[in-house]
Image (cartoon, rainbow, N blue to C red; front, top):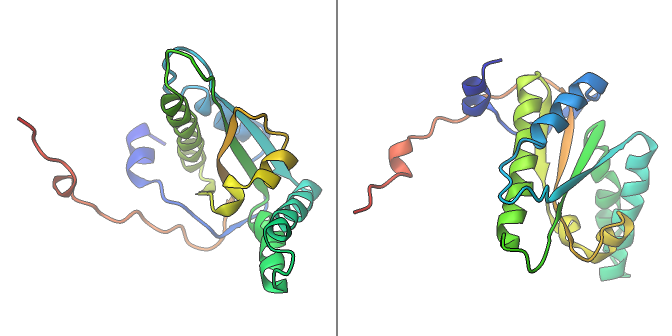
Length: 185
């Protein structure tokens, strides 16, 4: 697939199924992530790959987070949390490693990790895989961060769900650049 095709036609796909990306496809995904813009060469990112039984373990961590906030949470909320990691055969947690006090502001480091996540999505699309970037409460939860082993200076940028496309691949909506671009000065 050509680069412009991937850039112009990538869409988020929530309906994902087995098989997960294979080892060669994953290598491409992570190589693409490592090419993200990186002011200062800080490499302000890392990735956790979660699949198989580890998805069930992550679901239980999500349930713990729900119950930590509300010990009386309804069963529907805990069931939803438990099932979140089961939406795709592979999850990649994109983590920003922020270096405080560096000449590169933390916001730029966070954006760099976001670019790494986007690069994974583009590389997935280019390989015919389905993917979606999700955040939600779990991405910002302290219980989840601790359970994933994040250090104090680390933040979850997002959960990338990856797999084979279930059903028809939808097409990207047509947007007019003129609706978003103005000339200054």
